[in-house]
Image 1 (cartoon, rainbow, N blue to C red):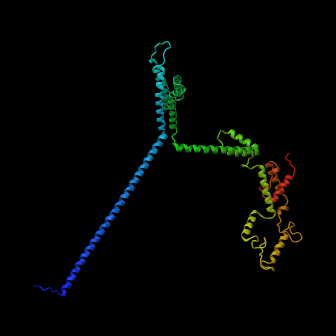
Image 2 (cartoon, rainbow, N blue to C red):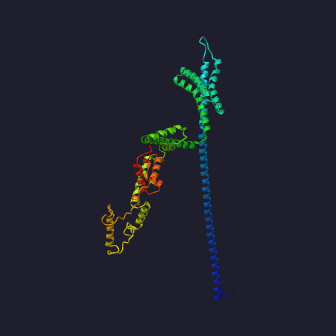
Length: 445
């Protein structure tokens, strides 16, 4: 009989074994749970990835379908544009109208001609001998249409075929009109006449438009641009003509002789061989011998003004260059240029201090000496003496000026400038020489 006693060591070993087994089972359970969770997560991820893939495919398919739809619409629009450009729809409708016209006109004419008979026939039947006449009349108009097409292809005159088409179509239309009015009334008469006339007329119009389209290779946009350009050019031309008209009126009023010469030059040249500006410049050159807008009077006035200015400069012993330098210095250093006058004396020093009353007193004193009297009774004038004022006129210089006057055509053409250039002197002496020669009597006669 075995003993039921279990030692503490055995008990502890059993407890430890149980705990170890429990821990192992729990770890296996946790691992299984994690594996299941991971598998579930992977499944969810795969599902999301598949959904994303399907969505991307659907979007691509929608884009392809939209692009295909757009391409189809573009091709349709291009075909419609091509048809409109070629006039295909118009040509098809013309063929339909011509066919319907023949189908309406031929039966009417056939019934009319078959119904004709002699007045003395007691029991008249259909006039079969007249049956070909409707076909003859209707097809004659189409002979003219085909002739027009043949003439166009060979570059021949087309108006005889137009006249033939119009005459024969009008004849067939008149027969249908008379028959329709008699049998059915005015409305039917006009309608039957139109069936014989409109078909050939539309065929001629189509042929005319085709010939024009063949001659003009531009598309619709180009023709629109050309029309806009033509309108702008016409507008510019009208404005230019208005400006020229106003300009001619002013020129004729202010420069009558020059304008007459201008018109003579324009008329003498072939049309378009010379432009208006060149013709006007040439007319001015012919009448005045000077550049455009310059006359002898304006040139003389300019020369007189220049001589007056030069005389003023020489009277004061100055030159335009020195005045320009003074203005430049005044702009940099101020109105006094850092001194007390033309002498260059510094403003500082003296009893008045650097900027005191001494400077102002000297400035006031100097200004008093520059009166129109030249400081008479007080001090000598600061103006330099011009030796040309008292210089006696030399006989050789007078002879040179007389020869210059003869070369120019009279003493009235003498000026200080040309005298100065001929003699080689200063302006004041040249003026005295000119005045002396002008004062002498003319002994050339």
